[in-house]
Length: 257
Image (tube, rainbow, N blue to C red; front, side, top):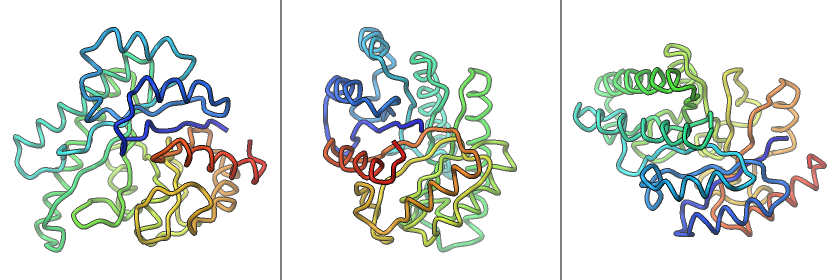
């Protein structure tokens, strides 16, 4: 099992502290770098990039989504968002990473179907532009399903899958997000899933709990993805070291590590 973890984006923990912790954790092979505040400027800090590359870790990159919206109906904002995400692809190249995770966008007018048709068309065009840039640079952009929060797009994983088929891009499956949107474990497998975010919840709140502290049937989840030959990274997207440790203990209980 390829196990990764995020760098606790909900807490302002220095990136060096996260690097030290993940390198010392013998179960973690990958660290997912949240390329947004307070880590947006990594691209311009050669010494920091050299430091990151000095650790015995592999990396994935989570593109920014705070105030970034590739589906914006304002063309200037969607263009700026595309350029911000391209910076994450450039960072992935600096770190010898081949996975960049992208949030597909949001809109406050999600109850207006005619309007949303246009917004989803903009999203597809933007994601295709980003995906083409990534392919030209040897990086895979994996588009993430979003949680059931007002205005977030692609809460429906089947709708996301249909869009990704049209623009020929892979998916980051976020199992916690899918559960808040009403999907169960048996609904979640698609062949084009190349990256997975895992955290637990109560089926309502996107709380990013440790595995085993919510209602998600992880045993069944791992059975399905193992049976179908998934060989990508399972990334723990959690908000504290304690949550990471609890999730690793849970995996041990399932005899998966």
